[in-house]
Image (cartoon, rainbow, N blue to C red; front, top):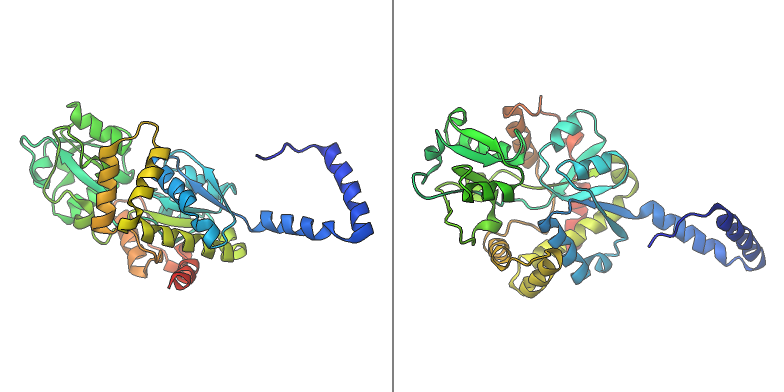
Length: 341
């Protein structure tokens, strides 16, 4: 716990410290180390959703920060924009896992942030519907599809999916039902005909089915689902710390996709979820094993970034493409990959 700051106590301590230094010179190195720790500590911002909470719990359980000498603290920032806002506001240094679709547009607007790598590379979303009358993406025309906010991540990915499949999105009624879990629930309740939602619902016994070509990790193979991004200040002044953090996450992802991690994953998810849902845990676990959506090398190619830029320009949420070095810096990710071998 952080102790409250007390000016008088500080001044008394400073006076005693001066005496100690004068007497034996022993306290000065300790103070220098403490100051250095504060200057180099990496503040990792995380949205407190279930998947991120599970990942944070698994990271703690397995001790990857300690293995790579990471001095880090997790900062919680709720909401889709929360992690990015925390970094821009100087409250955090890096977000390692984010599905925020506004990263590129806000960098273009002048935010001192760059994409530094990937979290989950494959899109872990699919299109669910009640099987009566909707079997393919084309059948969605004339129907109501639950997504999040207009031009939010779920809506944007649905529009991109339909565009790449040559289906007229203007003939589909998109409705904002909130989070992907809420979108899924809206279809179960009959408030929408279909939805874009998480693969965590693949094992739900609720009468919904995945429609043909609805699995986005297959239908949108070039799309990076979650990017990692950091402040320009952290890239300049905390480079070694960022390298260690990215190595720790790369090792965690490699472990997560191995059969050896099953028990640890379920333990972490039970810690993260108040009422443990075995069906969703098994869906996530099976997906991670079968699709290997992560990579221990977190770096992205110019083509990866270019695809995202083209997608958002096409959706009119990004005005123009920028040179790659203005929006991305893979130096820490590449150095971390070398550490992992």
